[in-house]
Image (tube, rainbow, N blue to C red; front, top):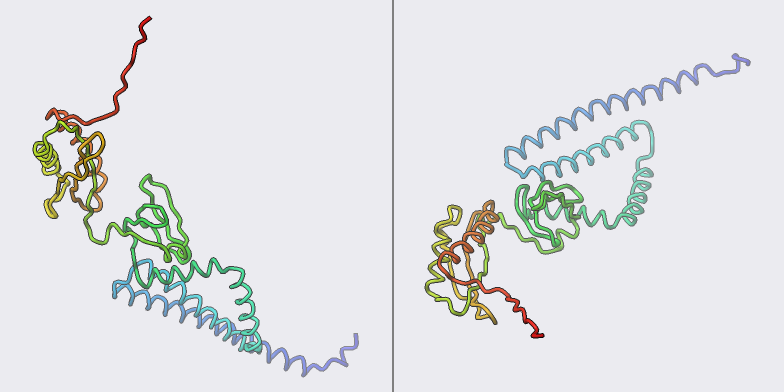
Length: 271
């Protein structure tokens, strides 16, 4: 190799130029990462002080973090001499292609944004949605996780969740327990109402306000049906539901009030 033909000064100039760009890019990355970290920590402190919902905090911090990192990468590419306008066009085209391929995911993302903004529920709430009932465990960008009543994990896409009906049993703090009990037609209505009301007032988890009610709801084919309506806190709902059901059976039996049920009569053939 003829080293005399190599333009030493040219190579030194190129090495110096690109070396400085690389050093500058490294410095931008270090300083930019430090600034992003400080901005995210500061934003988190502000949202915590303003008592933002925990799920909303995570969502906004993740979104802000990605935006700042993309801006930092663009700044580094610009420092290295890369044409950022062309890069942005490529990024936009890639984003469009990915968006078309992931329409469902984008719908879930939009649903997550709507849930974060309008807050129809929060972590710890008991809700009913998409045919499922459970306690909200986690609200993520694309899905919401519930813990079902039988302790099973339920994952619902945010797109369908935000577009469907949501029943929040926790918002008001109290729930009405709707029960129906039937007695025979020979039963005394006033006495039956008194027995049922005594069961409600004796239960420790039935609220005094709103007051429980007992009313005749239907004259059915084989029974007089009573609508029994105690109130409880959201957390005591099932304790009241099952407890009242058991106590009513015992109280009606003790009072000699019949609960009608199908009877089978055996017919013996005479031989």
